[in-house]
Length: 329
Image 1 (cartoon, helix red, strand yellow):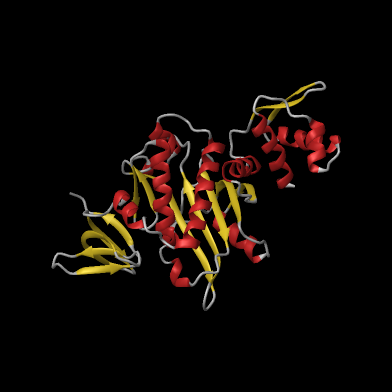
Image 2: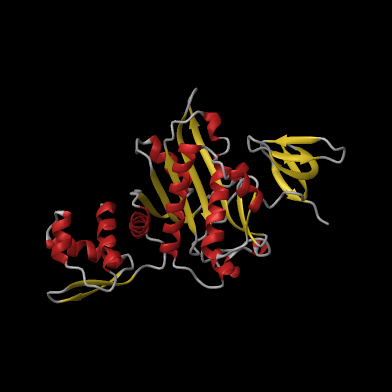
């Protein structure tokens, strides 16, 4: 049924201010006029407003403030031509966890899970991701890439830097990528990425790409301990954003980036993009790994995506994982 809602909403998006005939929608969907009316009534209860004109049709005059999965999916298809089933939830423990449950239950990828609230949002290394209902995008995309596991080592880095580049170009922002999975703007964290996979002996069986992006959060929406370091696209741009349009643009870009990665790997432009957006290169940091700490200066990435850290003795270490903390001046 979400596909029916998506098709109905897509018709209204295409029509703009032009009335849409209920009879036309009914014919295209193979439904009765009464069934279409019933679907519109349900969408009204979810926050949409449709104005009806006798013998003319309906116009969509308002959409919900909270992200609505069918409307996002409709915008994704109009933007990219890609059909992505989106499961929309009021609240979930974690969109990544729900995507994994859907895969385990036999749902065929690709699909997405979208939530207004995460009660146990996950970050890297088991951290909690602050995920309250404040107009942000909490999303997981499930794929079945059937690629060799070693090909996926660069996946999170590639997806992150390409999304950072898109946001920089789209909104004119000074974006940065902090190895391995954070997107920053003017030093404030806008987004975090968590990639999880089920791997067989010779290929990746399932891949879940999770991302939390602060879209319209205001400074007061963040916990006091995060207000100095967290940001949102709206704060960076200086005005609230249309959440459905922005979410759809981001999802369409992520789908295109995934397809490019499957076809080309990291791509010939990765090194240039990473150099342009790298937040850490040249900075003095401490990296925590399995209870140990290593201090030094970041010297970029190696070919596999490992962080290169030059210590005080001039030795260079290639680190595949760890928590990076900037050293205070």
